[in-house]
Image 1 (cartoon, rainbow, N blue to C red):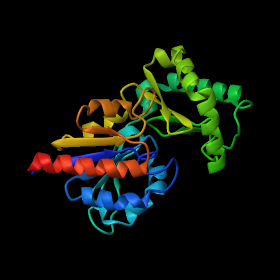
Image 2 (image 1 turned 90 degrees about the vertical axis):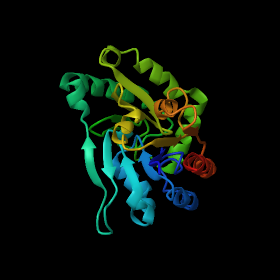
Image 3 (image 1 turned 180 degrees about the vertical axis):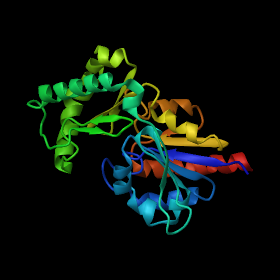
Image 4 (image 1 turned 120 degrees about the vertical axis):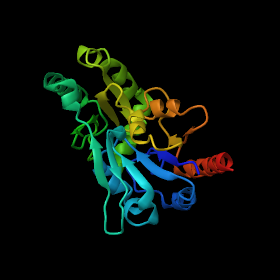
Length: 264
């Protein structure tokens, strides 16, 4: 039998943005688990994935066949081996080692300068604007401590003025970014993910060499989105763009049919 894994983005795919796992998806994922392992590959760090995916990771049988790939797969947590076990960190890389301390400091100064420049223009502010995750930097202009109401206000404002799209293009003009092969992507609905070039979500594939087939479902598959590279890597037949968890459930049914057809 062919060994298969299906990878999922988290925010916008398995959950609404920064919300808990949509349990309406559980029946579809449970059915999928009979023919495929499951992987969660997110720009978020492990603590955020645990917070949002707690039901799947700790309250269901799926935990024994679910791989966790935080920070675009630059970290890998393998499934528990028994009921008393937990997910085990088996791989991680360090951004500061990759780009050097001087470049890292210049990058941080650039982000903080932009944060100050835009603070008076943003619809609201909370706290925790910059989150260093060892293998990437997440910059959230309104702050990761924002309430859902503040997030919704920012999304509406960002949609109206294309703030993140314009800022993304502007940041790429800086020598700190261009000369050091730094990648910037839109992260979720409110932030930017910043990391060394090549450390996008295709990074997770290096952990999956034992699999014969790999599928992927994500919602940010277009230009500037942090699902784009992995989506395109597995095209034309093994990647799918979704718009929300409900749509993801329908896509899972298609993947199950494809897997069964390949194994028949």
